[in-house]
Image (cartoon, rainbow, N blue to C red; front, side, top):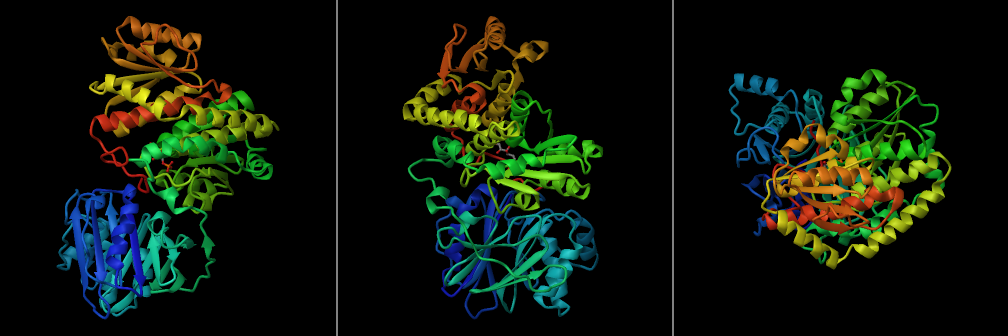
Length: 584
Ligand code: F6R
């Protein structure tokens, strides 16, 4: 949530570099943007900020050697220019990603002493605290150390101090990565911001700070101020993987990438898989924790494990986990599933679980993420950068990997690999422009509807819930998923003439539930390998046996995408959302 980006270098183009870098981080928040710049040899820091998306901005910024920028997802305070970052108090200018939980106590103390604030944000209070220490004569490093002690909550901030060159950054809980260019250094919430310029990075860990001045980079411990050594890491991502290429949107590009990503997700050697599974041995409780789409993936995996390895797994949305904390102890394994690896609700469960002695396994798409780094064992899902807000390829990769793990638990990894390889090649065959056009036509028939229902049973039940998330978030149509058998216990009252209902699967029970819907006037859109009489429209998918959940969701992703386009919504950046939810 919120993208932050800084550059410090030799040239005079910091402004334009930040502008372009922020555009690549826009998926993290797109309510407003802002940039603070310092000219060579000048103390004064110039700020430009506006409400709206940074992708729409096309301007030459004044020549400058270094600066900091921000693309905002509003938490404290509405979407206004005043609340847009950067925030400047006295001689300190900052951008911030995170939540300063106890900010109002500090704000009141400042106000009592006559300080007035321009915004309603928690971030401006961080600037005020830094400035108070700076004015009292402390060095920037000391100001940061002292300020960090006052902040409860997660943060990553970048700061500039008047009269002192260089950018200062600190982190606790929210991501920050340093990009090591030849003539300049970058600091960003995510690698795509600077990937065009360098793929050599250092990861800032929790409770660390960094001072960047041109290509001089010094890491320090945030509590002690002592130097910290860092390894340079080469990131294997290609620039194109974080760009749209020939596709009009990231969402459709990422949907089509599923032609390759499933095969990649299962490309782990036996050792890595066995290591993951060994964590589950001797555990008398296994919990999957995740949020949103990743939670629906976890629910699907609950079916995989039940059926394949006979293990009962508890699946809990991360934000509900505090109510089950008494079951977490040294004999528990927590399996975290997260695309970004930064989701605050999941991170909190892991931090608390770790304290209670639980073992932690995670599946994320970002190997350097906070969740990955906190885990005893981490398996990357290898989907490549996912930038559209709606998770697509990451979800199917997670499912493939969990399917593989369920088989690994019973020593049958090879059987799973075979099923998934054949699933991957079927996806490769059916996912093409012709198929997309068929789905686009179906989208046209339901685009004006305000309600849509989805049913499925077994591992397609969580996919019905996931289908609803996809459609809601990018098309704003009220979509709801149900287990096929539950529908007649209440929700069927919502069905009217022509209410569109997606029916996932063609097993007899589900089809008989579809008939019940049709008898009440519903328009039935079937997604299955076989056509059934009850379907008014049919989206054919290949028969992938045990891995059917993976293929069933793909036409729904395409449907959601086309519903968004037909309703004039930007599917990559739907309202109110952000890609990485780093606030609780
Ligand atoms: C929906 C979506 C969200 C995420 C959720 C968890 O398409 O993307 O529901 O799945 O915010 O995010 P991660 O997977 O990054 O933990």
